[in-house]
Structures are given as structure tokens and as C-alpha cells.
Image (cartoon, rainbow over all chains, first blue to last red; front, side, top):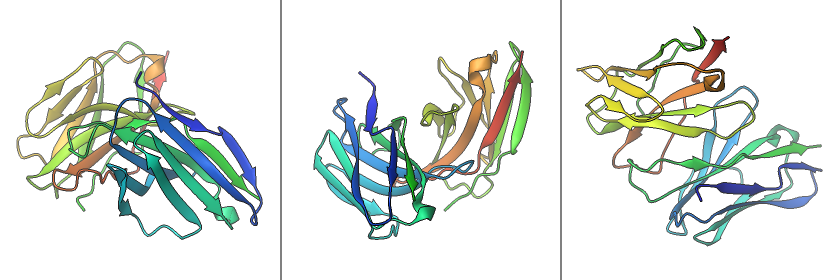
Length: 114
Length: 111
């Protein structure tokens, strides 16, 4: 099973809402990632978890809060978002933190903030 | 961070080879060259990677210049399914989790 699953596929939320994005993999991977992708732009790295510890936070606003409850699961908690946060949020995982390991991406959650 | 430069777009005919170039003139000795592609409405997928020598796998070949300042991704027989945005990415061997995408090349395959 080389699949990364993300739920929900689509999410519409108001600026005062609190919601969460979920990502799951069962490949035994120990590194997991969140990326943000705006329309017609490349993905931008947001957060990296390595062995369930946050190892990279790309100066992302605090209204985005990542969580890695276990090695298979990655959440992104959203609170008080702005319309400009509307984007495709991609989750990825890799076997470990060596450069030779490829990243496997999920299909993404398309988020619209109204 | 070392940067990559790719053409914005390229076109190819179905069943013909495609050569996708990437310039990385500021590459350092510890940078690996990775290629990913993103098909419409999907997340990116890994294609191939290399350090100094040319590499082949079931999807593509990677040709790396002797001075490593450029590389070329080769699709041997393009199919309609290969239409995607192709990203050339440099990854530092000591900063392994850090993968930063450039603008990429949008490949169109004509039947």
C-alpha cells in the first residue's frame, strides 16, 4: 500500500470556524509533511514532522497548527483563517529523513475560506 | 538555497521522446537533483533522482551534465498520460526533509 489519504477532499469554512485536515499513511514512513499550493503555483512547504517531532516550521502563521499524534497520522488544525488561505493543502510522507527517500503525496484537501 | 531554472512550458507529440531541461548553476557538491511531476488534479509524484551519474528507472532517465550545472529529464516515449507539470528540485544531503519546488515546466502532449 503506497497510498497517502487525506480527508476531507473539499472544505468550505468561514473565517471564525475551527476545522481540521487529516492525513494518514500506512507505509511505516517516519517523516510527514504539509504543503500549501495556490492555483497555478508550485507547492510550498509548511511543516515537517520527523519521527513524530516537528522539525521544520516555515514561518507559518499561528492560525495553522500541525499535530502528529502517531507515526501514521498527521493533522492540520485551522482557526480564524483568512480568504487568502484558500488553497490546496497537500500531505506527503517519506520513509525517513534521508535525501534518497522519495516523498509520497496525497491528493490534497481543497480549502475555501469565505 | 540553490535555485533551478526550467522553461515555463514545452510541447511534445505522443510516442516521441521528450527532453525536459533544468539549469542549476549554483548547485553545491552535496545537492541531489530530484524530479517530481504533478498531473492535473493530483498531488505530485516522484519521478527520479540522481547525484552525479546518469540514472534510469521505469518512468524516465536523468542525464546530469559533467559539471552538474544542468540536467535533463528524458521521457522515452511520451503518452497523453505524461501531460503534467514537471518540477526539478535540488535537495541538500544534510537538510534532508527540506524540499522546495520551483516553478516547473508544463508539458503538453499532442496526439
